[in-house]
Image (cartoon, rainbow, N blue to C red):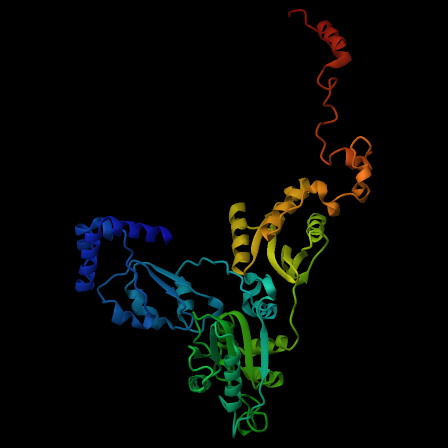
Length: 502
């Protein structure tokens, strides 16, 4: 995209008169033929990329029926039905679909998946709370989502339980839940984005009206949608407000033990819940008046594919306490050596830092805040891609979480750990101290100035006098190369064994 923009900018700068005429023709002619413009202004038109952005429902109003679009890219269509995207398909010569099949509540993604080749893309990790990622992993995503920690601990998961009862029967919204949701929005950082996803349309309308009327929130743009309508939406904070409340006796209408929970209890309820959770870039807040027991009663009679279990697991883990990342796995002596050298510099270090199986080999920071992630070649995933692509992906996913990445090759750490440590220190922003004057990395016996005379100092062990890796083989001497004292005898032996015909 950057190269395309530079090419277009250069073409306009070189021929400003032609660029002005092209712009005037497009404004006056609207959908003028590109071939005619190409013939008149080839240098400028060849640098342009005509792109139209519109929703699938607007296709018939924006694009004439006779026009053919070279490439139609569908994004955020998980909530649409197949009938809603047919007008765009009818005008496309090539189709590209970017979608999350796990969060699709409409039929468009499933129909397109059956008729198009599928390429699975890696999902970039997000600084979500590890409990949120664990719930998503248990309900469809598996190992597709990573639980890599973010600097500062990452996002949060908060549960706000509301004591609310419907008037005569199970209610889709109550004043108590609306007030609790409004309080969460008002307390959120003003510079961050907030998305409210409600369990029913009635609750979404009530929350939107309260946000518009409250002086604390009416100046902010707070999208409020019903469950299952959040496809393609993202926000720093997602407020999941279920909006349903049981009747006066804690049950549904007429004493039934099944709560009418709308889309939550529908066959696409699990997809709708996943769609709501993955919209969060960092924090998730759940506002509900439903207890785990009530959700279990409703799930017993709900059809397959309902989202009650997803909501129940989210509520359960929210009350279990935060999963704090820490050191994981077995002892690694190479990393342990580098870590001890960094700690001697006054830095805070964590070895194999993370939650569960997704860890960072080494994290470094000052005080309590880790800021630098040290990646090694032995931590790369065993996949069919090249080493270069694996290293690039490893670095990009950590940088997307906010880490400053420092590479560490295991061979460098083995051969010259001091130089490897110095490289990490430079990334942290520290100036490495000279190795000869660093008492933390020296033998305590050599710290005495009286023993610093090389002539007086004796090696304490074999490793002090000989390198770890030998500089020559055992037979690398005159005898091994055929020289020395045995040379004359060897020549005499060769003369005796010369065949007669030589």
